[in-house]
Length: 451
Image 1 (cartoon, rainbow, N blue to C red):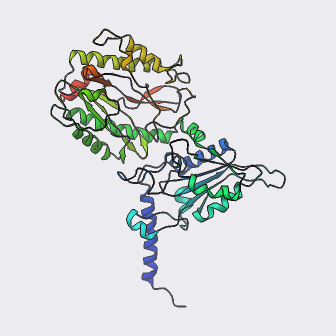
Image 2 (cartoon, helix red, strand yellow):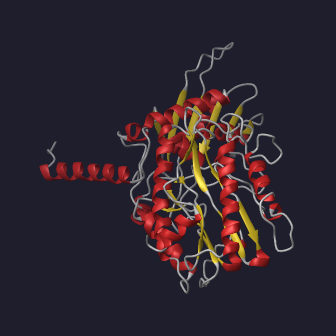
Image 3 (cartoon, rainbow, N blue to C red):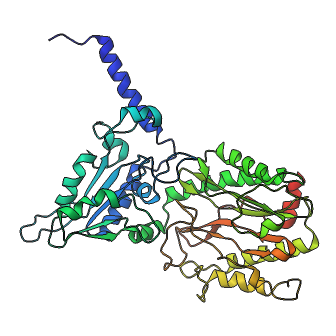
């Protein structure tokens, strides 16, 4: 047999190294160690006590045309992988029963076959045939997608088999529904149960690696707000501020906005989710800037309200100070393991903020201002800006959330919202992650003046 020429061997090695480098570059995000994702999969297996099968969306699914493909939050949480069209199987350990032998904990990552033509458009993908796949992904077993049906049927065997997956509720879509439809034709007794509540429970508490990524998102977003402080002036279009901020957090590593940026001035400062950002800011108005970046899949959420000409009027300052006072009152009332954001809970931080607003200041008709606080006080932050959580669990160690009181008075073209990101450390202390960004009215005016 003729020996291969050295340059053929070298070309083969170089091609393999290029693919490996290209695949690892797809982890350009700051990714946590594989052991963190493995621990989450094991924790989910214990909660489920059975078989979990979850699919990632494909590249042509979801609203990906603006920033490109974004992995499903739950799939990323369990895998740390951005591979489109992948799937994972997690089977909890089971004791022997009758003729059924004992089963150890098992996890398998399934990767779709590589499409070299498509990769010319979308970039190299990781295939199950790669010897490095288990090391790269951190899964005990990596198989071709074609093996999934046999493996699912094997692990789902039993008198009343159940597969936990992302069952789509009303108005939702699921990347797993269509691929798993074949199972009902194989086993008429098979039942699907929604795994999302179990994952939401796990995602309620952030580990140290997640908090570190959120901090990076917050820090980049704080820098963007500092830039906005200097750029807001009369006759500047709101869109310029939005673009500037996206540039600022983008150059600090954020891959996208965590949500559609809101830069609303004048009347639009009173419109909660105004995102047109296309008005020219006028002297004498305020502008609400609710904008933040997403860093390595993790969101941040920050809002500041600025006087367009750099100086609050007396009325604007009055309303601004009431909103700030409500936020500070909620901070002071926080009790780890007891406080919630629920409106009807005696330990609710919402009630503290609402009562503060309703007992400070009046509208133009002498009425209390509580009716102008028209949204909740806060929400969890993580892989989504309104992150999955177990709302029955009080705020405590490991949780990340916002506190964002606001007053919106359309009659006065005056809206004020102040929003910061918070973390509860392991000692139960409330940490303001966005605390580097000033919120006092005098500090805001000084920063806008370049002082």
